[in-house]
Image 1 (cartoon, rainbow, N blue to C red):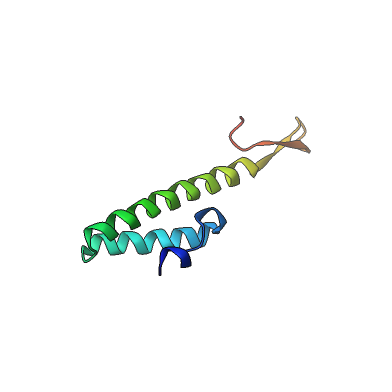
Image 2: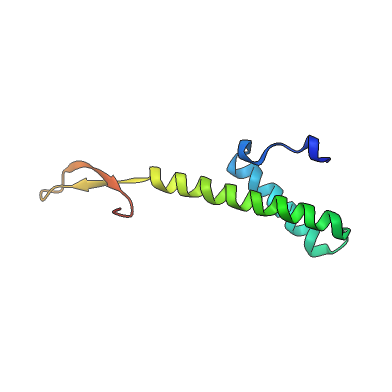
Length: 83
């Protein structure tokens, strides 16, 4: 895939970004990629990793837990980590 054919990292879903990142890791681990291309795909891998981390953080921030009153009845919600 040429650079112009690669989708912008910021437009990828988490699943597609992880799949591409796994593919990059596999190619680098095989060691059959030219040095220039290795550097190029490594840089894309770094961008994919940062994108995945941002998507995970956003998902974690959306998760809430139900807060119960003393009688055990739902009272509201709060962030899962208590932040």
